[in-house]
Image (cartoon, rainbow, N blue to C red; front, side, top):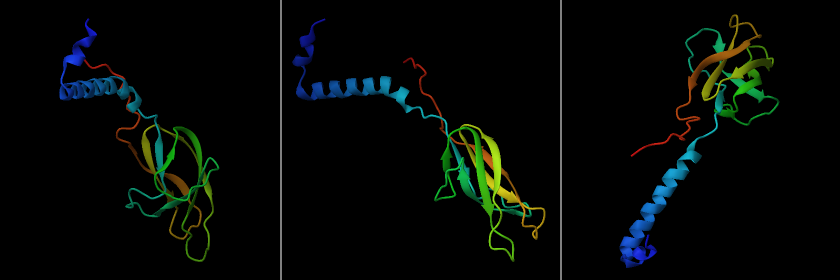
Length: 147
């Protein structure tokens, strides 16, 4: 094929051709880089507050690592040990720390809560309040598209 055909184009036609070629190359090769590895979020606040004797939690640590925030803590899927605290009842300064061993599913956001037997009980049990899938997480765009 004659390689001099591009030289016969005007400057604006060459610019448009280069942009189209660049766009095509980016679309063809760049989409494979658009997939994200699966991840999950942990949230110490309850999603639903309707059940009696449930309280928001403070995520003290995840696998021994502390966080300065209590919402949207990003973790990898798999088994984790999460340590919680909750608000103390009247007459106490602190609540005990409780650990929860949980297998975190990929692309899922978890809200946790502290469940007490009654409002006067200092002891609590940490548990999942609600879990939902994260939209667009881990989507691989390696599929071939025919035009």
